Structures are given as C-alpha cells and as structure tokens.
Image (cartoon, rainbow, N blue to C red):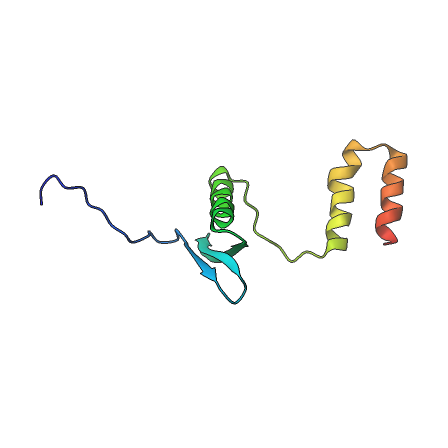
Length: 103
C-alpha cells in the first residue's frame, strides 16, 4: 500500500525488554550493552524504564563504566592514592589512611 508508513512492532537488536517478574515482585529490564547482557530491577515499570534510559544515556555519553569485581578495601586504597591525596591536607590524608587500613 503506497503512502502508508511501515509500522513494525519488533524491537531492534539490543533494545531490551521489560517485564514483570511475579516470583520476585519486581519489574525487570534486560538489554545488551557492548555485547553483554545487563539486567535492571525496580519496583515499578516507570522506575525500570528510567533506569534503562539513564543507562543508555550513560553509554551514549561515554560515562558508562563496566561493573567490576574489585573488593571494597582495594577500591578504598585506590581512592586514597588517586582521588583523595591530590586534594586533601597531609593530616587529613594520614587520618584517612589510618581509618582505611584499620577497618
């Protein structure tokens, strides 16, 4: 039929899917980012849609960081040296080190 817009109901590859998971009582969004499946959970459909939109925006902006399995203590040491040290006074840095190393 000429002049009629092609309307498709299929999602494109990697666009994700949203559904309600009754056993957990949560809404779920499954999508593919950089070839890996990501799953988001929320109490409402709107919340999971917002999480999906935020994740997609972060990917587009380039601010998305792949989740890692870094231990908290290891991350704290990295934070101490990389992020805290350049902007804190020596005494504050020493206090931070004392707390982090003894926790």
